[in-house]
Structures are given as structure tokens and as C-alpha cells.
Picture 1 (cartoon, rainbow, N blue to C red):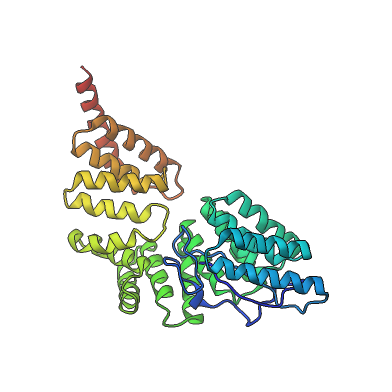
Picture 2: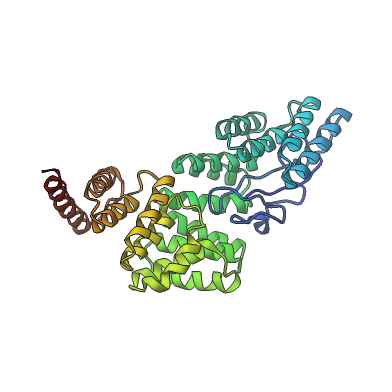
Length: 359
């Protein structure tokens, strides 16, 4: 999520008002000082420091930076960028405008420029916790979950009270396959922010990664009771129902869960439900959406292969299954041996059909 805060600005990244607020972490909707971004439950923070101003020029820099924050809240990207650049004219050693300019670059889809600006903020202030969090977010957007983990951990080393960074760390750990570490961090976050439905939804999601349906159901139920529109919790509940063979009941939860930006995983799970419901054409469309977000996502590739085979599109089925098995071979955590054998047998049958059709 993205959060705005005001301060007097200065040479350090001390926030007026202390640590980040969990209430500022809306990941799936704009409003209330939040700006929606593409990754479910990830944050870029707009920050202003809390040191006392020492010169009139710096006071003007702080005023311009704060004006930029207000314009960014109003979705005036051009005005915000102009204000942040003006702040740097007054004080080019002021780290916060660089960090805030990265928000503008992100909203404009300029990820490389956003990273350059965040790194400049960190060169000026290596202890800028929000900027480390932002760097982690950008790495996560670029598919570097391991690098994101390092950046979020650095943010927390600088300020353990950064609840936003801890939330993002949990997401990164989960996507990096470090499920036990993600669970431990999620429990800590629940202690720091009890009865928070966003945290409960996160715990439900991590429980699905740990293959723990009872915990997933418990946390998802609690989160959805407080916020029925919570995508991560809906994803977890859909996962539980699908494991129980209740695909029709799982479908509406998984459609809501698809709004959680999980790199195509949520779409893949919805596709699996549609396969169970024998809705092959719809499943193909859903798996295509999953692959648009994650071209090497094994469940999406194999699901797309299954759906294509069922409708008789054997060349496409062979391509998807071959890619899926190849990607699985490169994965740190591959398919269970029995499941991989089943997919290999299916691929052999599909190849036979392709050969027959070519005669």
C-alpha cells in the first residue's frame, strides 16, 4: 500500500507520529490516503521526515514536498512531480522528495525510474526505512522475491515498528517459498496489530502455502466476517473449499480472490475450479490471464494444457504441458512424483493425438 504522512522534513527519516500505521495499508482499493497498486497487499510509502528545519531554503523544500504529497493524494501526478522537483531545487540533499518522486514514476508505469529514485533516496539516507520498504516493493513487482525479502528485512532492521514493511516481508517470504518464516512473521504481525482483518487474511493465505486447511479456514472466516470483500481471505476460503471437492461453492470466493495480486496464482486456482466444473472454455480464458501475469507458472501451464486437451486442441495442449513440465523441473519445489508422472502420461497421449491429426 501507499501511505502519506507529513512532517517538517530534514536530514533523517524520522516520522512525525512514530511508526507506520496498519490502518494505512489498503491494498485493493484507493481512498483514505491510500493509492491502489498492482501487487495485493504490497506498499510504497510516501514519507516526509521529522527533523527540524535548519534554513529557510529547507523550510521551502519541506513545504513543497508536503504540497506534492497533497497533490499525489488527489491523483494529480503532474502537479505532484512538479512539487517534489521544486523541493529538490531548494534542497537537493533532501531524501524524501526522491522517495516520493518514485511513487509518481510507479503510477506512470516507470519501474526503472522509480527504482533509480528510491536508490538515490537511500544514498542520501541509508537508514530511510520507508525507502527500503519501497525498494522491496519494486523488487517484488519485478519478480525478485528474494531481493524483496532482503530489502524488507533492512527496513525492519532500521525500524522494527514498520508494520507495512513486515506485511510486505510476509508476502515476499511466501512468494519466495519460505513458508515457515512467513508464518512466523505473520504471527508477529498479528501480535502487533490484533483483530486486524487484513492481517488475518494474510495469515489465511500463508496457511494455504503451508497446506494447513484448518488454519486457513479459521483465519479466513475471521477476516471475512469483518471484511467480506477481503481478496486474500476469499482466496484462502476458496482454496479450502476446492480441496474438499466443493468447486461450485469455491468459485465465488476464488473470483473475489483473483483480485489479490498473487502473480497469477489466484487465477490458476480459479481455473482449477472451472476444470472441476467441466467448464473448459472458461477455464482456458482464466488460465490465459494467469499466464499473462506469470508466464512460467506451473499450475497455470498444466491447467491450460488440461483444458486444451479436453476441447481437442491437442497442439496447444502439448505446448502447455511441455512448458509446464519443463518449468516444474526448474522449480525448487516441484510437483509430487505421482502428479508429475500423471502429467507426463497425459503429454504422451496428447502427442499421439497431434501425430494422428498431422497424417
